[in-house]
Length: 164
Image 1 (spheres, one colour):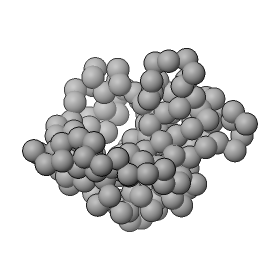
Image 2 (tube, one colour; image 1 turned 45 degrees about the vertical axis):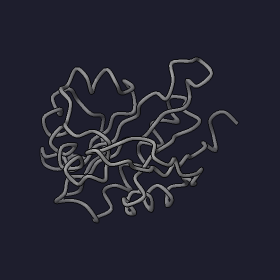
Image 3 (spheres, one colour; image 1 turned 120 degrees about the horizontal axis):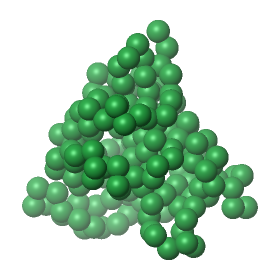
Image 4 (cartoon, one colour; image 1 turned 60 degrees about the horizontal axis):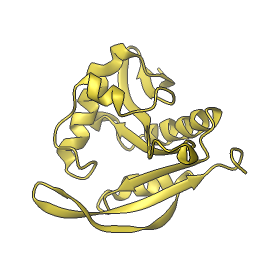
């Protein structure tokens, strides 16, 4: 059975949260140290462009966007979150989800997507690069995780159809 990429439903939260927890446990996916409750996650992500990869009722990954600012001039700029369940990594699911997220974001008027990725997460950096993200720079000692300062690689993708 093939994975389908579709809109995330509120009822998908338990599976989405578990995949997020798996990512958190790697230590190289996010500064978060615990998966939030639904209300917090929901409040921090845009209502559009929330996607899951679904196969026979199970979810293998998810992707969503967060606003980078509340200022109107940045209304078309968002930060990417993408997580793949441990059991499904390395199978091309991330590429399908990110490509769908890009298309969905453009359908909602987003002209720039950005991602801040730990340099150790080479797979995620490579995935974003394959789909048109470019490295803008490295944000050194931008935050701490588990008492240790961490850098992030800042990547961005400019739409070829929105905001040009």
